[in-house]
Image 1: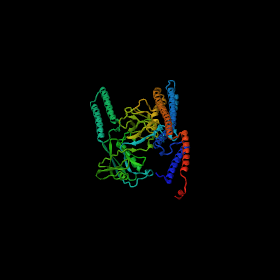
Image 2 (image 1 turned 45 degrees about the vertical axis):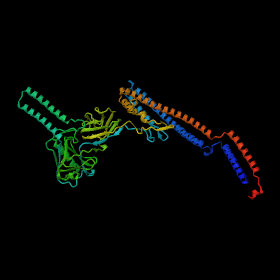
Image 3 (image 1 turned 30 degrees about the vertical axis):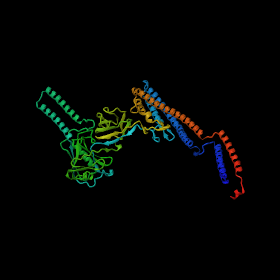
Length: 616
C-alpha cells in the first residue's frame, strides 16, 4: 500500500490532537479537583449528581424552616407556661376565698385581683412572634382574644300596635295654632277583638250575677244573724268576682294583659275650634279617652287612668296613636282635617291608610287600622343596659305598662320559646328564666332620669355578652419535616382556654373566672369552693397542650438530625461520582505529558520537509 506524505501528515495531526485533548482534560480536572466537568464526561453520573444536589437543597430548606419553627414553638411554650402560672395563682386565691375565715371585704379584694389576672391571661394569649399572633390559628394578623365590657347597651323595640303619622311636626310649632285646621268634630273608634269582647261579656255576666244575688238578699228582709251571714256570703261572692276579674287581667307568658270592662260606647269624639295647637289636640284626645272610662285610675296606663287609646309625640316628632291591647283603631268622621293633615288619609269604600314603623303606606280594605310592625326606640328613652356576661340571648318583654314598681315583665332566654313568670319591673332587675336554660347572672338596669313609663309591648334584647371572645379560627398550621411528613405547628387560644364540645375534660377558663369573680363579690363561700375543680381542669388543659408542644419540638429535632445525616450521605455520593483521585490524576497527567512529548518527537522524525513538500 502506498503511503503518501499527506497521509502521514493527517495521521500525525490526528494523534497529536488526541494526546493534546487528553492532556487538557487531565490538567482541568487536576486544577478544579473534579473528574466530572460537563454532562458528556459521564451522562449517568451527571444525572445522579443533579438528583443528589436537589435532595440536599430540599433538606437544607427544611432544616432552615425547622430552625424558625423551633423559635415559634419556644415562644408558644413560654406563653403557655405563663398562662399556667396565672391559673395557679387564681387557684391559690380561690382557696383563700373559700376559707371560712375570709370576710366579705377580703373576698371582694380577691375578686378584684382575679379580674386583673383574667386580663393578664388575655394579654398573654394575645402574644406575638414578630408581627404574627401565636394563638390565632391561621388568622395570624388577628388578635385572638377580646375581653368585653361588663356593660352592654340594650336594643329596645316596641312590638305592640302603634299608628304612626306620616307628617312630622317641628317642635317649635307644636304649641302654635295648627295651620289649615278647620272647626268640627274628630272621631276615633276603638273596637274590641272577638277575644276581648268575650272576656268583657264574661266579666259583665259575673258582676250581674253578684248584683242579682245582692238584690234578692235585700228583698227577703233577713234577721240580724241572717243579714250577717248574707253579708259574709256577698263579700265572698264579690271577692270571687274580683278574683275572676283579676284572673282576666292576668297574663300568660308572651301575652299582653287585658283591661276591665269598658262602656258600651266605642267612639271617642272631640270638638275642635280650628285654633288648637298640635299639643292641645293631643291633650284633648287623651282627656276624652280618660273620660270614656269614667276617670278610673290605672297605674299601668301611660295616662294614669284606664283608656282604650293614648296619643303622644314620639322622639322623632311624629304623632303616635296607641290603642290598648285587645282593641282595633279606625278613623271616623273628621271635619277638622286633622287626620288628613297628619297623614292618616281616609279613602273611599271605608279603606284606611296609615304609616307603619318603616314609613311605608299600609292599606286595608276595612275600617280597622292595625299596624304591628316592630319599632326601634331611641336608646335615651330608657337608657337600658345589661350588666354581666352570658352567651344566652335574652328578651325582656313588658306585659303590663307602668313605671318602676307598677310595670310587669317576662323573660325568655331561648328566643321566645319559654318565658318566665310575670315579675315586677324595677330600676335594676336580675334577669333569669327558671323555665328556660341555666344562665349566668345578668342585670337589666335603667339610667333614664325620673320614672319613664314602660308601655305594654316594649322589649329589651340582649344578644349575648361573653366575658372573653375568641376571634381567631381553628385551622391548624402544618409544616413539613420530611418528604411527605407534616406536623401541626400552632396551638389556638380556643384549644387552650375554651371548652371543646366533645371533650368533657375541657372547660371555658374565662367562664370559670367570671363565675369565681361573681361568687367572691356575692360572698358565696360554697360557690367559690365549687370552682376549684374547674380551675384544676383548666390547668390540666393547659399542661396537656404544653406537652403537645414539647412533643412537636422533639419531633422537629429528630427531623433536623435526619436531614443533617441525609445531606452528609448525599454529599459523599456526589464526591464519589465527580471528585478526582489526586494521586491517580497526578500519575495520569505525567503519563499524558510524556506521551504527548514522545508523539511530538516521533512526528518530527516521521514528517521531514522536502522540496517537493514545499512545492505541493
